[in-house]
Amino acid sequence: MAVTRRGYIFCAFLLSVLSVLLTVIAISSDHWIVSTATLDNQVADSTIQYGLFRGELVLNTLQTPSFSVLYMTCVPDVSACAVSCKTEPEAREIEVRALAQGHRPSTPCASVTEVDTTNPLARPPVISFAVYVCTLLFIFVMLVFNVISAGLAIINATMNPTEPILGLPGCLWSNIVASCLGVVVMMIFGIYWTTSGLKDHLAFSYISVGPFDPTPALGYSYWLLIGAILCSVTNVVLIQVRAYLLERSPPPPTIQVENHSDGTMFLY
Image (tube, rainbow, N blue to C red; front, side, top):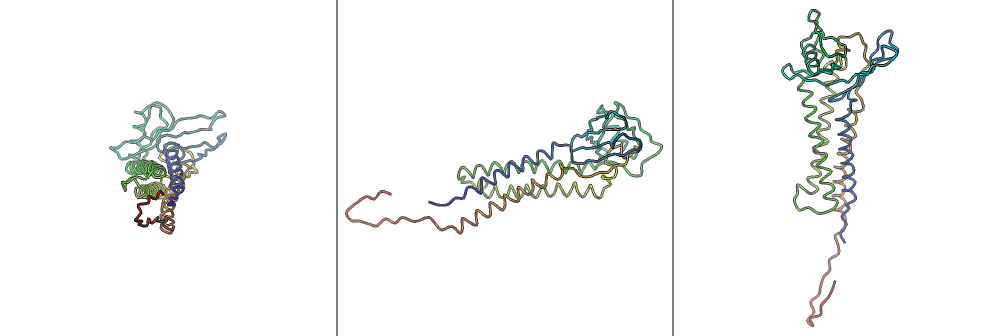
């Protein structure tokens, strides 16, 4: 009987599922950027955390903490994105426009935004709209390829598809593409975080305009992508190791039937 070593493929399926889960958590969680915000006479340090879509601001200026939702708001015509705690969409858009133009919007988490144009900022404290869109695009395509690799792995663990794209070559290349896309996402966001000044202003008016002193860092949502990448890379190794072991395995025994003139039937 031929040795199929399907256990390697099943392990690849489990790792693909894990990679999907890690990527989904990275996309949906609000800990891409985390920071404390220090201010004199605070009861405790305030905290800021946000992800690709939403976040949370906890102000500890009084005895009772104040919680506000942060919204990632993009204005394509000024090529800028920023986080805002304003409660109305129109007020958030006005705030992002003001920051993109280097003006000082009002910081309170209210339903309206007032803009001070008399004292411009040194540089616009915003996130590049192109960088934000590229990050979203690559991470969602990465998720798609992770799902594809999981589907192909379970197909190959339970049956023998005849189409190459549905077989192990398709599973192999979907993992390669997923891992490469994960690296691209981490490089885009990580390099932008380091070089653009985002870690100084956080694209948030409470930091760029207000009196708070931040201590920023990249949160676990960003670093989860390393785990997803490692899962895909491990799948590539598993598939290649399985192929290597199958090549080294001895071929299955061949049954030879001798010719007999007496017409005897042999059952095997």
